[in-house]
Length: 368
Image (cartoon, rainbow, N blue to C red; front, side, top):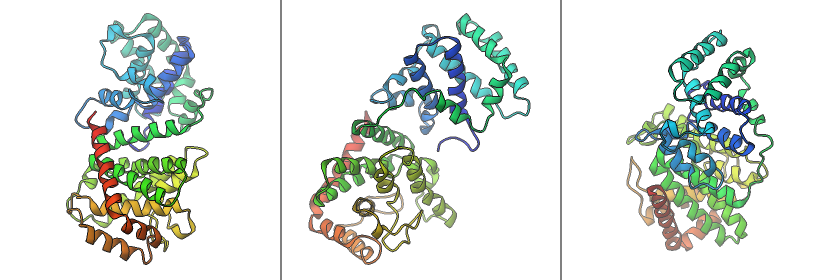
């Protein structure tokens, strides 16, 4: 979502590193962590104020899934780099200079020749020898321009599959909240509120503990697609143009498609990705009739609307209890589930306190 159109940069970085790690006979564990770090190398682009590497290190270092890849982004003098860090930095250096060219061989080999003559003192002789050997292989340069390069990279990780546990999903949701926080702090805080409201409403509807946990994670995930939307639109203080509003509508589509990549948990993509769908089928982006969906989808829709109504936004102040309930009731006639709205009204103070708690939790998370 953050990459420029037609860019393959993280995949190029990862593929270069993959080929170099093979030539340098890197241990399997280091190879895996290196490739993951390369794939996450653009994460820091979310922040316009801090160095990209420091942002990525901050996001990954406390992660269960990716903490072993965090050290690649830690500030360190080049003479202290181990061979895997050198491969990472060299791969970044090459990828940053690569451009689309009909003659990738001449273009790429020119980059390598320049690096070997000007950066020889930084990289180990074994690595310089490896990149020179790789540079002489025509197929290597063709691979870097290959449209299905992402699949080549994923194939290099095929023996490192992971069965996702609830703790992993929670870890991913925290990572994405951090990412959202760097892109648009208000969106991340909103997600915290939606998450807590959705959990409490699911509890009132007798959801199992596992499904309550999935509801919390879905709330954190639901606005992930907003990373694809420019900050100028997300923080706009006036009315959006039709074009801008259509761009905003894409966020729930991207949330759905991203979560569709997680196998075996269909409710996650639906609860998070359908939060703007409505009972009458007039929501977006798929015009799904939520009457025909499970209760989790309908709870998330109510949670999102309620949380948004109570929040102060760039373009308006948060609505009062009376105005919020009135709006929800009006929408319950054709857009939102009446029973869920009734439960929310009956437990308003408790649910509004949960919303505030969710906001506070994410604010604290983003400060660390």
